[in-house]
Image: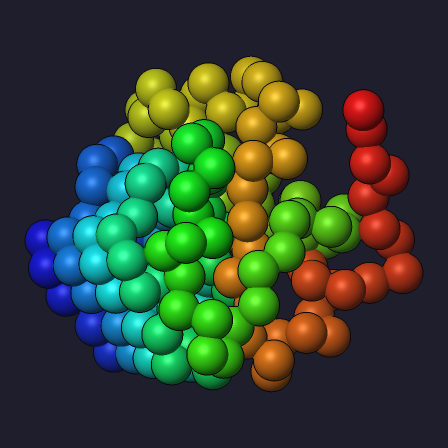
Length: 155
């Protein structure tokens, strides 16, 4: 639905489906895995971790000052949907980031039986390079974003 996790201060959500508009707006601590989102996903987010295993609408990360968002970009269009005023985009570059993403998808599959999540886990090496991290400046030093142990790129 629209505005789900608006202002969330904690908890975890696993949804085997697509969220509406304004998902996780002003989220401060909740973690969630969803399979798509409408416009304004993670707007004004200040904390928490969101994983989107599908398409998003426009204006992702507008005013986002904290937390991390991972988005699967199978059609290579995601960068055009991000509001770049504050956040930076990068691929998953660290072992800690890969582990965080993998663990959340694994929990999503365990709680929902998601076919999409299962496929991603079964073909991890194929899917991992298709994920983007949406990173506000306050999170730039987190081990999931920038750490000593950087993943070795594969061909």
